[in-house]
Image 1 (cartoon, rainbow, N blue to C red):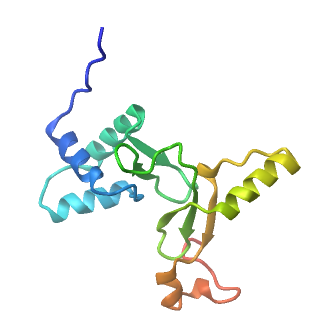
Image 2 (cartoon, one colour; image 1 turned 90 degrees about the horizontal axis):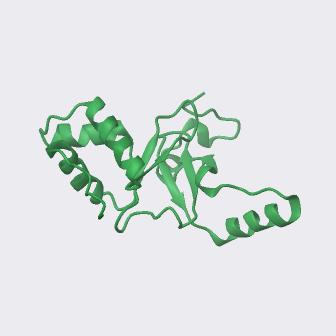
Amino acid sequence: MAARAPYRTRQQEILLDYLKTTGGRHFTVEEVRDYFSRKNIPIGLATIYRHLEKLVAEGVVQKYVIDEKSAACFSYVAGDGCPEDRRHFHLKCECCGKLFHLECRELEDIQRHLAAGHGFALNPFRTVFYGLCSECAGKGSPAAEPGGTSAEE
């Protein structure tokens, strides 16, 4: 017996259409709501959360919980997004809060070293490096100064 395609509501379809345009970029529920608000498409936060969690369960969306102070981030992983099997690390800007994917051979070397030399298996999907993105560093953020503080402190 063939598996049935998941049932999709109109709101779920417009959400999925939007997610396909993100190209694997991370986003928060607030960003999704703001997008639909700008387009005058009424869709509530609870509806967005519910549909995103359903898409996470289906494997269409990846959910990232970086730390207890930050909102969860999501990434569309179906199609041309960021496939789960493509190992990557994350960079998080302490000023603006943006989260970036980082694929870097040198970090893969460190990951192999940790495994071989220290018996530690690093999870790249949950590894986050904190600092400043180029945009915030260019603005002269207080966090860019030696001994400066981040916006989250």
